[in-house]
Length: 564
Image 1 (cartoon, helix red, strand yellow):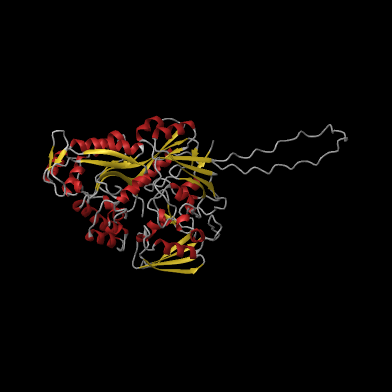
Image 2 (image 1 turned 135 degrees about the horizontal axis):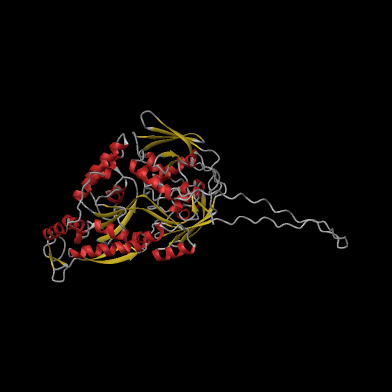
């Protein structure tokens, strides 16, 4: 996929705010050994040279990153539902995406060839690559990994089910045959579900234990994981296979990365200013003026694919009527949210994909119109009560006299709480009483999987079209299709979209399904597409942002440096 002009401009702007790459300090020479003992009665020489001190060792470079939410609960790539930056630190991949959003051989591949009919892709793998457990990376491991990814019950099997044959030609050559042209293959191999695990450690430990004891070929090794608190990762001293486009040789520039989970923005910023944290990911927009003109900090922005949305469970009677869900879409003043909470940055949106993706362009959806919201709610059988809260009069599946009051689930971080409060007020304006119920990410996920929700506030980050079936294909009921969409015709559109010959035709097909999903079901009322925002100290050097990919990926962590 070629980067469009918008991405190219944004990447250039991003690079302009980054620090200049620092050079890694040279390894100090070995200290001289102790001199032999001298007899006590020997005369002390008058011209003996003054003893010299051994050169001090270079201080360890420990990069500390803070973020507000831990998304993933597993390092098993075949079963994980979400990923975090530590996944990219630990693993490597066959295909990479550079800062211009172009595809290149990843750290595990020398090159590839595609047959004329587009059905056979042959990868020529790098030799001498090893996993953290000491086992060798080779074509046999790739074959095992792909077979593991598509087993029954694996979360993202759909990404590779088009592969009909995996041929190991020799230890470092593997050919993948698909059942037709498969333009999405490189996209999937370049993402988080393209990260390759160690066969030896996976089979030795078993999937359950491996999930928290991963072994990859990446630039960092997991040293410690305190769930929902921190990851500690140590530099892989053997790493010397970064993707060629990076120009990087040898191990990563920093010795250690501590990745901390701190939901409170104020705490993260205090630690940034104290020097205890170097990078604040998902930085709070309202603090932008504080840091953008201060030379002690860097403000880094880039296109991102994070979409905030109000989700509505189509099986919950209180929002079971399509007109009620559409009314909620009309109740949200997206422009006001963008201007106030996000200082005019990002993009107010009513559709389901990042606006840079062609499958989002030209799609229409309900936008802010409180009068239309009131009309639709009345048509669905709701009447306004004396206290300003709707009451069911003739609502299908809802007892007459029931007030429109719901728990409004969301994350417990600061951004989520502020957005929940803003949308809560907008829902109240049309007669819906939404009681905000914040949860940490693991609890939120388990509650959604258990059911019982009606209206939620949620976000996702993904730059691919497959996010539409991921959340809305009946195959994924009840989770991650936790809003209950069940439509055979739309399911078929998703499946057929992956079998078209070109990327452009794939986008066109997904656009059709996207519009039908909105018109027929409307399970989401999207709000806002936020850009990536990072605050960093000026000591952080050589930050390489991958647009639409949540900012950092494997080679970003290889190249980033720290000078203190």
